Image 1 (spheres, helix red, strand yellow):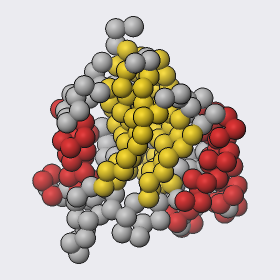
Image 2 (cartoon, rainbow, N blue to C red; image 1 turned 60 degrees about the vertical axis):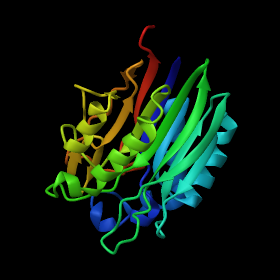
Image 3 (spheres, one colour; image 1 turned 120 degrees about the vertical axis):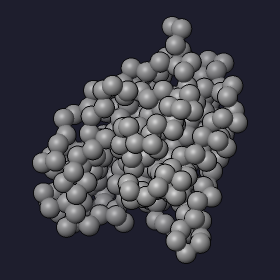
Image 4 (cartoon, rainbow, N blue to C red; image 1 turned 135 degrees about the vertical axis):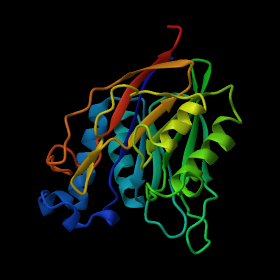
Amino acid sequence: MNLRIASYNILADAYVKPEWFPHTPADIFEPRRRQEALARRILGLDVDIVCLQEVEPGSFAALQSALEPHGYSGVFALKQQGRPDGCAVFHRLERCLGHRAHYFKDRLEDGRVSGHLALVVDFDVGGDRLRVACTHLRWDRPDRPVEQHQGMQEAAELLEELVQRDPEALWVVCGDFNAQPGDPLVRAFAAAGLLDAYEGRHQPTCNANGSAKAIDFLFHSRALRAQPDQLPELDDRTPMPSENEPSDHLPIAARLLRAST
């Protein structure tokens, strides 16, 4: 196996509030302009698989039109409970074996299920079965007890009901975890036997509300080894989105190879 994979929160238009991005010119948020910039940014990654979060139906259609001429096929799953966005996976691999949306069972304060999901896409890569789970784990207060933390509940469910029930597959689990290196939620993936592609070399991946932090992750099975991309420098003063970065997140990417090669 030798392929490149990326994860990217593209910032849903529905979540754009200009007051949250005081250093970003208003015209950068024009939807069509941002969709075109996102397509260019994704194509520039030159990856075989790209996992996207905060994807709205219109953005998915626009990206599909832009990426298909370059050999990419895409699948999309919308969150439930009336949320405007979901997850999408685009790929240019020959053998896609199918996909499914796994909706988490965690509940909102009013008792309804949250509607968050993991989009799982299966591939045959040179005879290896690769399962890619793209997710956007729900934010919760960092001071909430671990057993009550909703992002942690989703992470535990993803690991227990998907990854650990199919240990024979090669797994990649990636996305916006809304947690930082060292947090219990992130440690849970390592405890489940997955490796962090950026372990020991984390850089900020997002600048929201003037606070740069690493909250995007790419975990993989131990049978794989990762060669992660170096990220652009990002700090509290870096305008995001900007002329060069159409989201408030950076894409993260890595080359994955069989550990024995």
